[in-house]
Image (cartoon, rainbow, N blue to C red; front, side):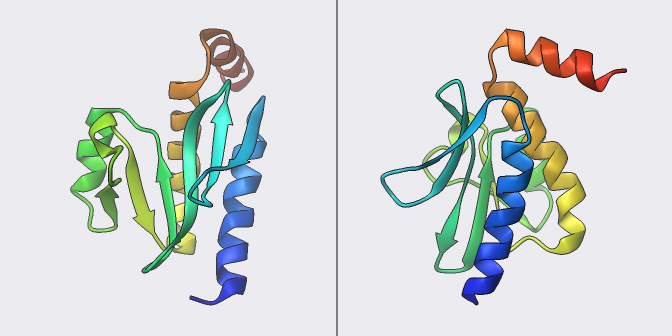
Length: 123
């Protein structure tokens, strides 16, 4: 994969994740860009042999629905905890991915942050 494509994808993920309150970026021991809230991961992105990979925290119900779609797969090692991955997302995928990233954030965030998020986004 082209490095410009990889950088553009990472920048897109970074813009979505770091716009969320108190979200931080961390490079994990495998070199993946990991986005966390209160020490808990909600998005992991990086390069794989197939290109750009994006994984996000989900619940099992959402995971089951997404796995029925061709583009999504159960994240290796952590998929049993509801994590879902997508390889090389298209431009059309990003509206849905933004919502899924936000849901992952809310699953990892402390209750006070979820309450604050809900107040800000229901007005």
